[in-house]
Image 1 (cartoon, helix red, strand yellow):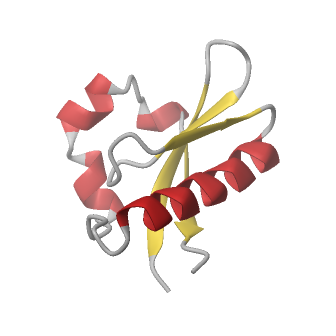
Image 2 (image 1 turned 90 degrees about the horizontal axis):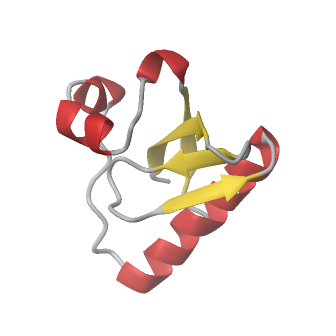
Length: 90
């Protein structure tokens, strides 16, 4: 079973925003952390169904930490983020 790293950060509206560094445009939101994580599972599953096996291979956290362009573009400060793994449902 494949896992993807998800970065969870507070959103401006008080919700939690979940971003997938390895899957462009795949993100989710929730009112609290549990809801955000569940929304992330469903967003990842939806993207898999849309793209089939065409998803990028997951990177390690160390590769994502070095991806300053992605972090900057998404306004992510890893010292204030929650990092988790999300499994593919299928």
